[in-house]
Length: 68
Image (cartoon, rainbow, N blue to C red):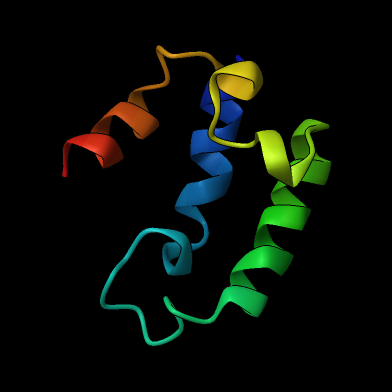
């Protein structure tokens, strides 16, 4: 499984990160804790998650989110 695929699977577990209607969507403290967890899972820092350096420009999840 590629790093991009692993990231997609991890992000899918946490709708708070992408669902604008989630009750805690605007809670940056909760989201930061989740990003920390995800970063540990894929051995990346929070600052690089979602960027070209972490997963590449071909990440289908990122492309989908950007298209919304």
